Length: 396
Image 1 (cartoon, rainbow, N blue to C red):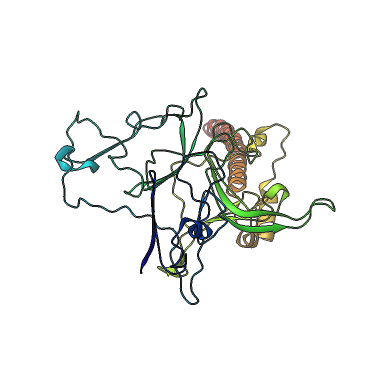
Image 2 (cartoon, rainbow, N blue to C red):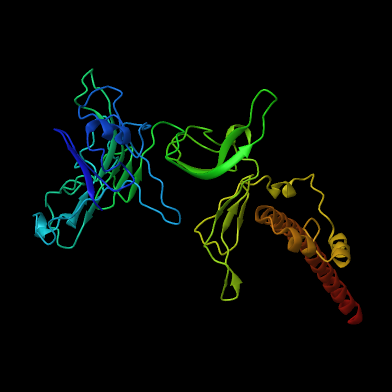
C-alpha cells in the first residue's frame, strides 16, 4: 500500500495511506481538508474536527469506511507494541506481577471513594514487608477516555476516567485503576453498573403518548435504597434485576430469569436442571439443594390443638375417613401431591398438627389405661376380700 500523505505538527503526526481515503494528486492542505475534514493541531475550544473518509465528522475525530463487497475490514485499531521482550525492568526477582495491591497503593483522584478494605495477592517468592508496587505495575494505558472536571475553578486537575484499557487486559469503566479484567463503577443509589439486553418495543400508553422503546434486560445495581426496584429491597442492598421491558416505564410483565448450565443432554440418566424465577418471584429448582439451614415464614402453627375448645376427632372417625379416602384427614391426597407438588411449609405444619393430635390421643389413652388399672386393682382387692371371707366360712 502506497503512502500518500504525511502531516506533522507540534502535537501530532498523521500519515494517510491507501486509495480509498484521498486521491493521490490531492497533496495540498486544501485538498486534504475535503477528505480529512477541518484539521487543527491546537488544543482550543473551537469547532475544528478531523475526519478520515468523511468531510463532515460527527465528533472531534471520525473514521468512516465502507468495506468492499464480500469483504470486511477492521475499523480504528490501536496497537501497543512490546519493544523490550526479555528485558528485566526490576521489581522483586525481576517480576512486576509478583504483587498486585489495591487500596492505599492506587493512584485514583482523591475525590473517588477508596476501596473499603485492601486486597493483596502474593506469590510464593514475595517476602513479608516487601514494598508493594502500584496496581498499574508501571504499565500505561493503551486507550483512555476521560473528562476534565474543574476543581475549585482550576482545570489543571480532576480528570474523571470514563473508559480505560491497560496492556495486561484490565479494563475499567468510570474507574482509573481497574482491579480485574472488567471493573465497572456506578454512581449513586439505584443506578445500574451494567445492563445487558435486547430491544423490547411497547405500544402506545395512551392516545397522546407515542410508542416507547425499552429493553428486555438484566441489570446489576451495586447500591439500593429501601424498596428500590422492588418492595423486597432494603437500604444498601446489592441487586440483580430482570425485566421484559413491556410494563410501565420498562418494568417487567411476564419475563423470567434462568440460571442453569448450558446443556441439552442427560447426565447419568437425570435431566440437567437449574434455577428459574418467574414474574412473581416464584423459584423453580431442578436439581439437589444442599444447605445448613432452611428458615421459612409460616402462615400458621397448630398449637391451637391444645386449646380446650379444640374438637379432636375420635379414632373411630379417623378410621372411617382413612378407609374411605386412603389418606389422613386434612392432608392432600397422593394424586394432588403428584400433580401439584408439595408445599413443604404447609406439609410440615400439617404434620406438626398431626403430631400434636397424636399426643392428645396418647394422653387420652394414658388416662383410660390408668383408669382401667385403678379398676383392676380395686377389683383385685375386692376379689381378695371375697376369697378371705369364703375361706373363713369353709373352715368353720
